[in-house]
Image 1 (cartoon, rainbow, N blue to C red):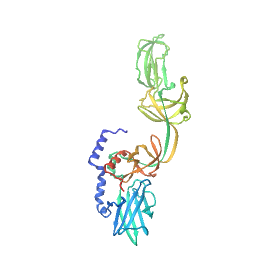
Image 2: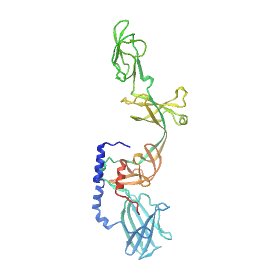
Image 3: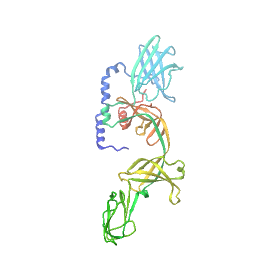
Image 4: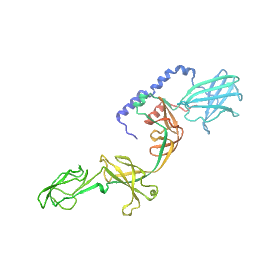
Length: 413
């Protein structure tokens, strides 16, 4: 879970306490009171559980039926209380968030009028029903919104709500290998005395950072009795110090200086994985304090005939935060699948029994139940429920979910 600064939590708590996420919606409702009085949503239910639409003796009971079948419109038409089974022109037009229009014509099925097509989720739209019967026209309009909320742009900005545009993506299949960080031999310089003698001064300790040319120690030559300096041949860190003041410097190494700006991850690839791993494959290297993309540079036999291959991966360490010996994991990308539509995994939320994202159109946000395909740690393929170009909430999508749930969104048709 992403860590968020305390100040941000204070902002969110304040927002929720005073309900600013609904401020724009309340204002919108006030402005539309007159409109809603003309086009109020039907509240009366008919004998089949559908909404009753009544006008001048004509009645349409309209229901979204979804028991054992994909959601479909069913209707029962009466005139002055008498069922009508023919000579009816019934049409339902749905206008969804973003302007998409779905139209349904009806045909009689022996017991009810059936709309052609599936009423896809979410069942959130503006509804217009027209009926032509005995030469007369009847019309009903109302809003049937669910899983929808309205948030002004400045409030969304304060709450950290960020969106992205849905589009193609690359889904990566990875396998994970584990190992340790090491230092390459060519990145270690061992410093010896040029002439045998007595150590008169030591200028560095283990772990000290030194630059090329820095003085490490002073030695008094046994032959000339003159003092000379031992200096670092490279920039790096003192990882070995084998001498103290007063000791004799001979041919043995006195210091080891390591360049730790780059390290090597040696990942153990076992026989069951070996056929899928190759040089130049992408690797996501992860450990405490590191999360970076790298490449498999070499594949080497394991030491001592151990039953694995070593995948050597160069790890950048410019700040020196990583040390040799650190346990590390590498997610090696062994396959990339290009998909026409994918969303960021951070956007996905559970809502009822769906996995959804929240699309944004201007200041309005609404659920989109998704049918999902392949996934990795970053992206998930979308098979149905979203269109390329739709803007969807990525960061802090849970705030949209909480706001919709707080509003008591229903699934009643």
